[in-house]
Amino acid sequence: MFIKDLEDCEEFTAGDNSILRELLHPDKADLAIRYSLAHAVVSPGQTTRPHRLKTSEVYYIMEGEGIMHINGGSEKVYQGQAVYIPPHSKQYIENTGRLPLKFLCIVDPAWRKQDEEVLQR
Image (tube, rainbow, N blue to C red; front, side, top):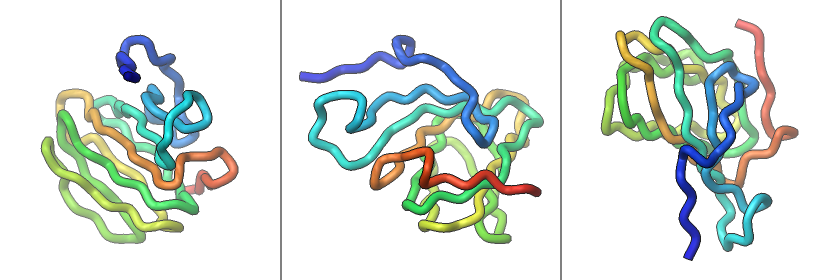
């Protein structure tokens, strides 16, 4: 049985400027998975840097609210929603609320630095 506590995951600033804690990654534990799972936080009034991944990604909004931007389109997002981000999509998220925006990032296949491109606004 494999159980990982969020508080045991090292916090770091990702390339898009969100605060991340990586919960699951097949390269970092002996797990038969092909995806990675991270917990992200964006502070009130902050926006992540535009970026794109070669892989698909899903955001699951756990707390807060914001605006998700994908390939020029924008939609409000709230707690309890899942957002699918197709491969090669320009994406970023804004926290428009008063509380931290907390969400899970599921990347399939698993996130790799060489698969991400951070873009200019």
